[in-house]
Amino acid sequence: VPEVPEGELIKAYTLQHAESGLGNDYLKRKNVIRVRMEGEQFLLQAMNVASVVEWIEGLHSATNVALDLDERPMPRGPLFPR
Image (tube, rainbow, N blue to C red; front, side):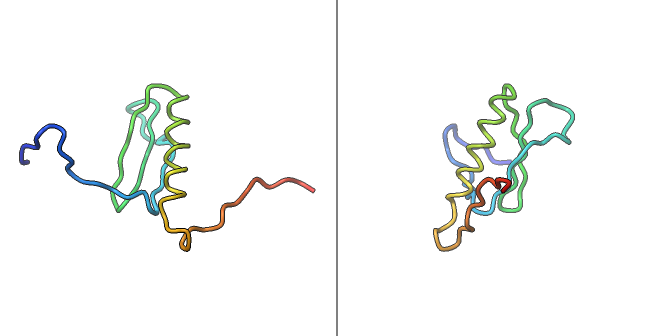
């Protein structure tokens, strides 16, 4: 593996079509977030449950706006009983 200078970008990923959520099947650590993008999977560990929620909400928001307007699916709002 080649040495990478500090602060140099190794690879950039797009959040288009990314999936993120709890990594609750990963039992070695607590507060794990699973992110799948561009055919790869990443496990991120947050400090606490509140951070997990913030990260997942942020990732979902970023994923929702990553596609061009013409390609975005219509958002589904909350469903209320009649």
